[in-house]
Each structure stands twice: as C-alpha cells, then as structure tokens.
Image (cartoon, rainbow, N blue to C red; front, side, top):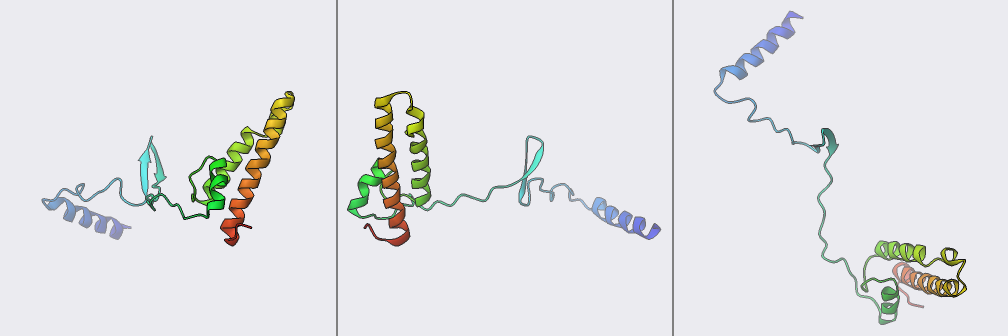
Length: 129
C-alpha cells in the first residue's frame, strides 16, 4: 500500500511544483453532462435546423392541410399531432348534451379524419386517390 501513496505523492508533488494552476485545465461543464439546479443531467443534442421541413404537395391536398390548420407540406408527425389535437377538441362525445353542437362536432370530426387519412395515404404511397 505504501507504493500507492508514494506514487500519489509524486503525482501531486509534480503538479504542485509547477507554476501552472491545476484548476485551469479542469472544465466543470465538460463532457456530455451539465449541472442544472444542483443535479447532473445529460446535455441534449444540438437541434438541427432543416429549414421549414416542408415538401411540395399536390393541389388536391392543400385543403386537407388547411383543414388541420397547417401549412401545406409539413411533416406527417406534425399532421398527426394537429389531427389528434383538433379531434380531441371537436370529438362528438364532448358535445353530447347539445344536439346542434353534436351535429357540428360529428361533421367536423369526420372532415378532420378524412383529411388526415388522405394526407397519411399520400405520405405513405405518394398517391392522392
């Protein structure tokens, strides 16, 4: 065990005998972690900017994108998220007590679902049929 402590002493003596500050080389934020709120956590990867990520779409699909409240050509994931959000808002079960609201919600949910199906079919097959 004495050999371990002798070697450790030699390392520390070499470090402390030099004029360089040993803490200058120490980077507390180095590596793939960061400290936030007293906790160490992994750094998120840098965000990639792919522009707006839109693709050209056929003219027949533009009303479907607009029905979902999106710009034509956004990603399929954005379309699915918008469809789910709007379907949650316009679902017929939320308007069960109001007959007029029920009819409007049913019509809106049918339109949203048809738009979503046409868009997803186009993304999967490239066909608008």
